Image (spheres, rainbow, N blue to C red):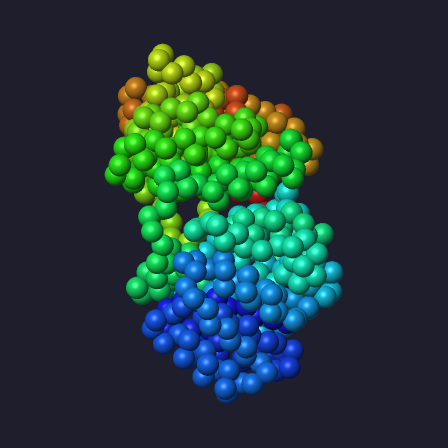
Length: 515
């Protein structure tokens, strides 16, 4: 096992990093440290030499002139590595005590070419998390979330690296790790995910000097220097056929890489330079554009993708400004997460669909399709109803009649809603329209607090048979927008009980949830 550490001005974090490797639960002879000092000026080189003297044969140190980025020292480390597996560890980060043993065991047991170990954020750093819900001995690159973690801290079979001549691209000032890991993923016969153990502690440095957030001693990159973006699109496009497999990978590039690139375009103060940078973003997006991949992403991403594909610089920059004003949901330090819901100032609701009033919605000059602004899947019925206000009652006269009361949110338009009841045993569904909110205040002591008023609604539904029925509210005509309520057990009709209910003062009773 070879652990490659690329180090540049990494003190005092370097000490903990190297110690975490030397203290692994594997036998000492099973792990070697290949540390490359990339022209450090803060004592990093001397600290590495101290470890080499204290651990002869286990710690190998190379000193080289500063290269301006982590690619060259990592490549030097690959050339010196002798282990069956290579693990790339940034000098800022450190390992859990059993990380290497557990990852190697998973690779040996499953014949894995790559093992992705769980990342844990330290000091406020936010690593990606969606791929670490459970252990995955065989994670499908085209169906799992492994492509959303492209940092180099992974266990890779050295034979795979050498067989395909894989190296970090030294001509890229940033993003070289994503290009390298993408190539590794594409060539790997099997990728595994170890989520049941905290493998890598992903550290946010106090001085903000992480390798992933700075470009060291490098001049301002040339305008249009979006080599990583173009390289990533080309790797995906040229190595996967058009269809669902390619679309799965493209959603990551649209939802993460493209967003970062556009923020860079927006921040560039020189207008001409900014335009050239945008042109470099436009080219790979236009070449590898997929409407089916875009359709899977939030509307704000679809909007940006459409503007970039059309080469509309001014409009694309305006949307980035808009996003910044609405909510800072894009710039998450260290987190490769797709852009999530961004609430617009207003909506239009038509035919069961909900459209966000993002910039250029139904702008006749641009003629963007409504599908770009469709947020029905993102908002759902929950966005139009106050869930805490909803109550369910069962009619005492007819136990098969269920009443649902609640209150709509006032900041959104009155979208048409439906109430559905689905029987657990056979999936039979009954659907009724939810009446428009009452104009006069609803005065009913059985209503939940806050439901009275002109935004209150009452919907009644009669189920045809006994059984356990699951209730839900949804936007009319859209089953994917459901707000689940609760399951209700409906008994067979009892005529005597119904007669007693008629003689009572109230024809409703609180519902008894299904057990």
